Image 1 (cartoon, one colour):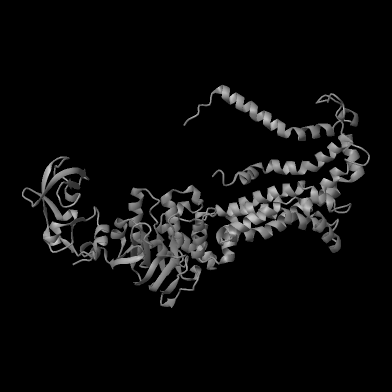
Image 2: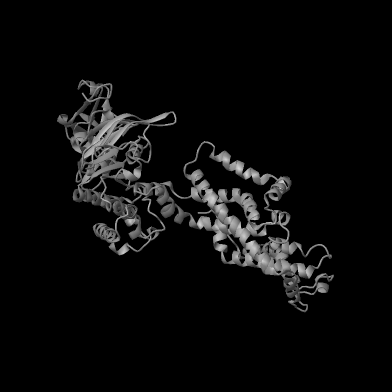
Length: 276
Length: 332
């Protein structure tokens, strides 16, 4: 069945796509715009769009009061650390499930995924107590561990899907060519899996960067990442929308820029298996 | 030396036995072809020899040493796969050098061998390309190059030509035969194409449902098929198999006569109507219906004989070339 794409249909589709894109992007746009307003303009009714006195004052105030970089580095350590640790565990796991599946491989995969169905708050108290007793509260490494565990099912699943796409005959060829298990993984499997591993890594860094539940509940001052930096502008002295927006913009900017540069890899990662 | 011996080898997947107890010996330097219809276990047998599948019971001996428990990497065999199985992230040079690198051979010797293989296989100009930038035939050559550089005890080929188009297949067939003549190394070759088997093999192993139906030289199989299955499988076009009274006349359950051993004559004992005449130029294959012997009799006649659909013809079989089979299917 062929579907003719008329110019009118094309125009309608384009308009719809733009509308949807704007709708999704709007909160971020609004946050960025608000961050350049004064507190008064920020809560003006009706809202002011583009024509106001642009000011960077909010940014300097936020920076002066909180010190952005301390939070920034915590976020980097937590997101990158938990991702690397997760990959270290997930690569061998996904490898074995993809290439030497057992009778219960499917069940194990489902069971791993099922842990994501549990509301996080359900295990908050036990984990909080464990962290308190082991001295991991308000410790970046504690958060690295928690976020690794939280995201591990997703990492394993993504890698598993990727590894499944690698033709088994190539690995058999490597075995025939004299490669032992280690050489097979290092010289053949890993290079072929690198695009998949990269997508998984990028997505997981984004997930970990934006994770707020555990990072807010298990940190205080010392190891707080950017999520806590944003949150600190929302409560005690009432809401300061412009400053909150400035903090949010600063918090999401690095990950947004990283996502922009790696979007090709990310899109490929998210649609892998669907299109070849 | 590249001798391979299988003693009472069996293979089961779960409860399904795909290879019943099987004995086979392959001599050093032989070109052995496993042929049979799809699902006959020929690829499984090759993978058992390679070590990519574990035998369920029995013993495999390679070069006089028990190899049943030896991992594929250490059996000293090289394999060419149907999908080529090249490493997509490596250049042609690195692909071919990979087994040498795994053997930790020194760089200069690696380069010398890769260059030598590339010269033999006409790949010298492509050494810096990636497999994705090559045609099917070139990829197949790279796969062969990767197999020959390490000078293995034996080569294993798993339907290596079935992804190529017809013209290329004929060319590569000859190249592989020539390579065998040059290297004089044992080659085990799996195919479902009996023409490949006939043209390339020193020894053909005909398989059906995991059983060896017959082992022999191509001409042995052509002249002395051990049973009806081999008779029908080897030869192109296939042998005419006739049952009933005509077979009884020759004291057999089934008689077989190859298309090239039947002639179109004016006074032959058999008669029928031409269904299709396939003119190949050098030969014409005439498919004759209504003989009362079999649904269709195929006759191979010289290319310049003019026969058309609907013509009535009389046929004379060359009785000296008649094959007789008993009711158990075996040759009488």
